[in-house]
Structure formats: C-alpha cells, structure tokens
Image (cartoon, rainbow, N blue to C red; front, side, top):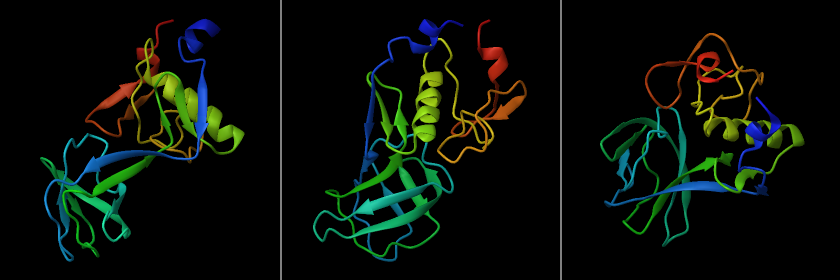
Length: 171
C-alpha cells in the first residue's frame, strides 16, 4: 500500500462538534408506548443502540435504548416519557462519516486520527465493515482498546457474519 492509496480522494478532513443521523417519526407515539415507527430505517439501529427522540412542539427530548426493530418499527427497552407526532425526529450520534470531505466529530487528537483511519477503511479499495470487537480499528464507535487490523475472523456489527480484514486487503 502506498500513502496515495491510503489518502485517495479523502485528504480533506473537517472536524465538527456533532453529527446526527435523523429518522423522521411517521406515526403518533404516546406516553407509555415502547415503540415508534420511522421512515428510512437502516441496519445500524440495533439492540442496545441509544437514540434520542425530540418533540418539536414542546422541545422535550429523551434517550431510549433500542430493544429490536421489526420493519420500520423500533421497539425500546423502556417506555416513552413524551408524546410524538409525525413532525418529530429520532436521531443517533455519529463520530464520523466516509464522505468527501471526510467528517469527524472533534475530540482528542488520537480520537480524531483513529476515526479518520476507521472511516477511510470503509471506502475502496478496502471496504472494511464495522466490527463488534473493541480491540480493532473498525470497532463501531469510539472507545477502542486497540487500533490494529486482525488476521482472525471478526464478528460484524451491523450485519450478519464475520470478516477477515487480512483477506480483504490486497497486498
């Protein structure tokens, strides 16, 4: 691998305070409900993921922990404390995006560098997936205990199966 391969078209890096992935609530949800229905659900809404729900009328917000998803319905481990209508949103915080320019949430220099490398490894020619193992540079969020790529099979975070990073990288 050359430095140019690692850089590709992703030289530009923008550090910002916050990145949110939003999901529009499509059906009314009431206090005590344990689910919402959203538009455009993606595979990154998994068991244990924390979402924030915002009521656009009262400006109340609450954190909920995802239990499971069925279709476009997100079930929570706890009941709702506020009412929500189709004008409201659910969102999750993201630490980086593999875009051009690359977007990374501000943090320590080490966190920013790790996130930049992590996001770059999602793109071609690498195409690595988010993983569940905290001791891997492709761990799904900040808080990694190590930053290595692994020879062994690793469990993917947001889809079924495993991935051997060693086998995916052309040498």
